[in-house]
Length: 153
Length: 204
Image 1 (cartoon, one colour):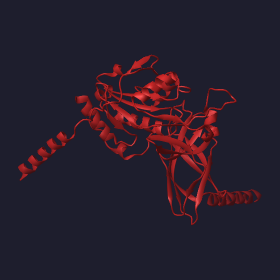
Image 2 (cartoon, chains in turn yellow, green):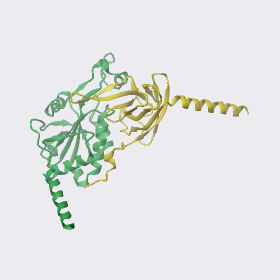
Image 3 (cartoon, helix red, strand yellow):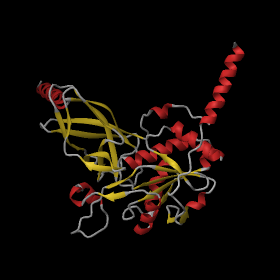
Image 4 (cartoon, helix red, strand yellow):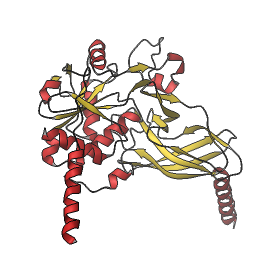
């Protein structure tokens, strides 16, 4: 009986934390599979704010390594990488973290560079204190339109 | 009617082939150079006469543009026939000689395609090649570099943290079989377009 109660309360806790901790919809999260001697790897996903108020992504963390939010921006014909301290997502809006734009940059790996096929837990931290854990698969290739085309000679 | 349609198709095909000219020779940019390579020896651009060379300036501590570009070129190589692939050489010029050793570059690039060659050398030699190709790069101001990047720095005085986060030209320089710059690809250039241009350059 006691066990059952404990289990029930644990479940309730788990469920409530999921509800509370998943304010935004995360679309197609992926990490680019990278060489095992890489010192940095990128994390990409889409974030859709289905709530009625703005959310600001301020940090990410993971047991697999340190994560920063970066942005690639074109400046004077060059591509510049810059850290982002706050990424606002207005109510009802979507933001894409994708190649050539916003991305998570993971480094200082605790267990080496995550290999192709592995899944990495990443926690998103919002300015209001909410946290949301996502699971990101390491894949070799991005899904791009050009990739779907058959090879021609 | 059928004949007319067929004729129209043939004319249309001929026209589209004629319209597809190869990339023009760009003047005032490029030229031969020799740099240390991931092959463990000096490599010159002239070593690749008869091949189309795709050259990119980057660094391996780059999370986004460089691996995205290398993955894009890796996918391109997979689309070429074996004969075409033998006539295309990807060169990755590292602007970060402090951290990218020839051995590191070799292991890094092999992941994308074992034929990719990395070039790295003393700073002034890399700068000379960058100037030849009008490629720009610069380190981000010290104050803006994050602690993560500072930790990534492998060398330098402990008191003087030399963080680095580069801005750099993200073009892929396309060189024809005579080693002349013919234009640029980008990480977003469709593979079909790249493939077509490469075929045209190889036919010259």
